[in-house]
Length: 139
Picture 1 (cartoon, rainbow, N blue to C red):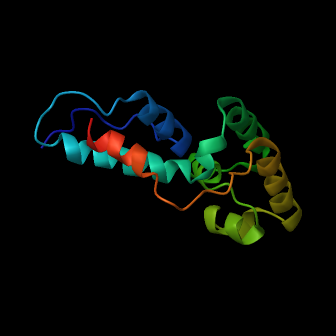
Picture 2 (tube, one colour):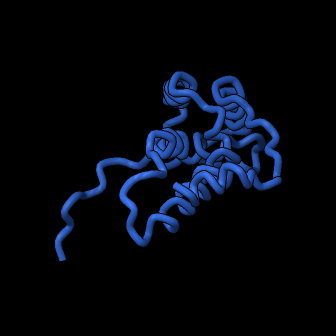
Picture 3 (cartoon, rainbow, N blue to C red):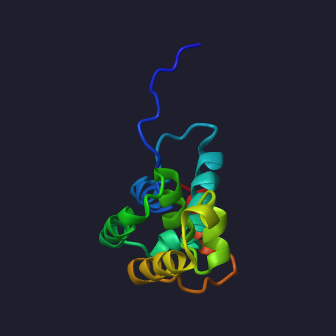
């Protein structure tokens, strides 16, 4: 087996949501179109319920620059962006060996940076938007 396209980089949930918003549920009418439309709908619905729904390129860029002094790994920065931690416990689950690498003051500073640069997601209505779902199924 040969790898044709090796992974170049990882994407944040924000980037995936933006890509999916550019994709139209319509397209070729083949037998898997309904499955594709349902998958597209469910994925976008999930990502809209996550912090990615209110993030911006500018906010993410500022966050990455502000986190440089803490020497976080790219995977840790990606998780901070995707999960938007709000407590020390959440942060310690994201950062490997956080107790050894960061002081409690540094953890608080990271949480402050996150709060300043990544807006808090709005409360989501848990009701299913059937009209939107039908749009994808009928596409």
